[in-house]
Image (cartoon, rainbow, N blue to C red; front, side, top):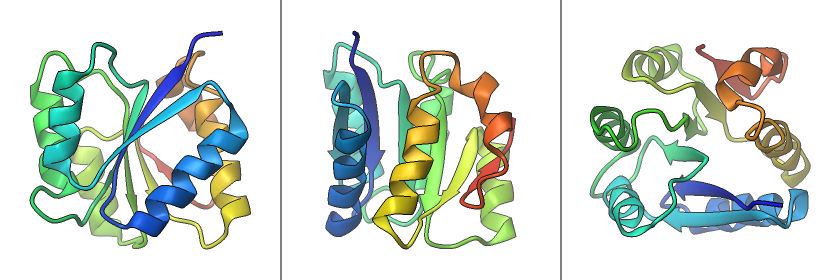
Length: 149
């Protein structure tokens, strides 16, 4: 079975550890790369031979926030087709609209529990191989996901 590569950019170390631990519990073939900010995420992608299956970007990070990283990903021919999911503890409507307008496929409000995080990540990762963009509208029922496509 082929590995699924997930890239997470989030400056909160606890959130990052929980996120990667949840992915490891879901599927041992998932490789979780992580960066502390958008600039580091872009540099990681440029150094990698393989492109991530999906990118998760936290909104608020130092050096380069998720918004600017998303803008740069969508302007780059190599990366513009990668599904990008914006993540935040906030569920502000303006942030969701901005994410949609900039080309994110989804806005993910960080759950409070490991169980909920694992459930949402399981839904997302189980649909990577079958076409995440096509599957996302079917995941709209999840209270943590706000789908744009």
